[in-house]
Length: 315
Image 1: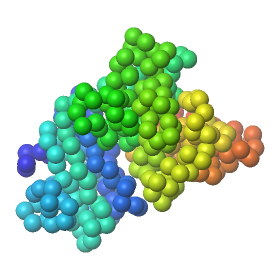
Image 2: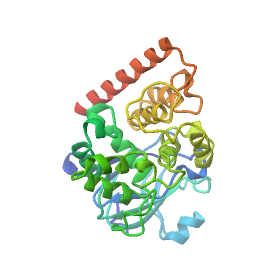
Image 3: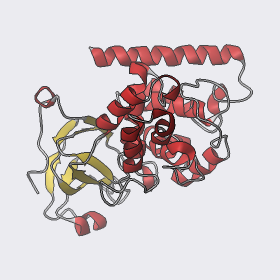
């Protein structure tokens, strides 16, 4: 088990996917869902304040926050680790942090990754069939949505593609969309086809709220509260990627993915701005009573944020 995680050099692992992982006491117990990674993926723990990273001896110790026999992986952040196949249990031993749910289970396998899913989507679902919008033709938006809204939620087996609200369902339809984009791109997109891969009232709300509870955790008290608010909006309407203003779930989804990109690159001010737009009130941007002047200013800020993010990734 001790060979699971090792500090790695990013330059030596260019083929792996790097997953930012803010490490803190969660705002609510549901913030840290079980996470699924592809073998070789790099998980980059970042934190401020007093935290550490321990590998528990087993699941029972994880459940009980029992650090007897646990392996200290890091007490200074950031900490980058390389994953190997298996199920692994991580926690923070400082004070009562663990009993306050600063712990997470990682399941690592050789199944498809978010990079594979988003590459397929960017190649198969273009033009009128595009499901994501933003920098790099929506690839970054797709990655953020997948990493925190889809990838941690896997079917019982990698070949089970008809289980709703799972990564496998979305990924299967992305692969089929290569041949039949007019039908399957919508099934593989954020809404899950509004019936095919989405189980919560045929809406975008479940994956939206999964990502929201990670990137914008102060917007809602918990996952259930977020889903209730989302379903009260227009989640049943046709999805329009790239919608940046107006009272719609499309607008909130757009700003949520912008917020996630900024949050996981430590731009907390930019993330807070877009988290406000992704909230239930919409903060005068994703709201029905927003005036055109306010909307245009905030949309311009959204464009500037995406450009800055794109430049930072190129550099």
